[in-house]
Image 1 (tube, rainbow, N blue to C red):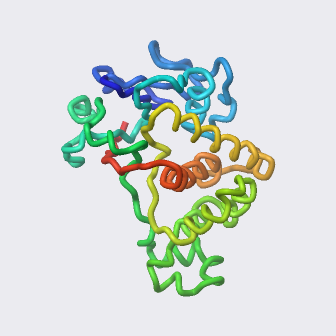
Image 2 (cartoon, helix red, strand yellow; image 1 turned 30 degrees about the vertical axis):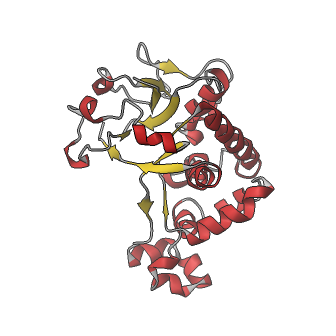
Length: 265
């Protein structure tokens, strides 16, 4: 793998990656397969895996492995989502041919950028019944949301799926230089770069993790762990990171979007 170190975070064995150059990081509760990177040693937050998901490895990598003097790009993906070569057709990518399509080198056009983000997904095409069922509190505040897709923002989406008001509470713990801008971003944007996947130079990786984990650890004082139950809120810290990532990299780095694909494991 030329000038690119890619880490795939998983809690399942991924045999179809054996012929790729990807390094596989284990966050499962069972003993990791041989040659997988374990993140339950050194400075780690492995005991928070249920709530932090792939961030469990991200923290371990930051504290135990990251070398800011390294000249390589550093990238992260996850067990069902992978970076693709630019000309790969998403519809044709599967477990049997992933080695031919997964990104394994630094494209020449990256020389103009500092970071790479997933192509965005849009959240402003919400079905009316779901909007009524999950977003009624937001509808009471602004009925225009029901009729105007441009009002169906990231803020609405987060409130509908990950606990009403939770992200506003979290923003109060954010550094002052980002608080207002991040809220405005959530309130106005209808799309984001998903899956906590990014590729960047080591010095930027270091800055990102420093800002991210400083914020999330402060958020623990408000949300804790015991009350985070169910699919929508158990991984709250990962969902917060996912939204902040889109904002942070766009504010602090010169970025571009890049294709990725979902592959069922």
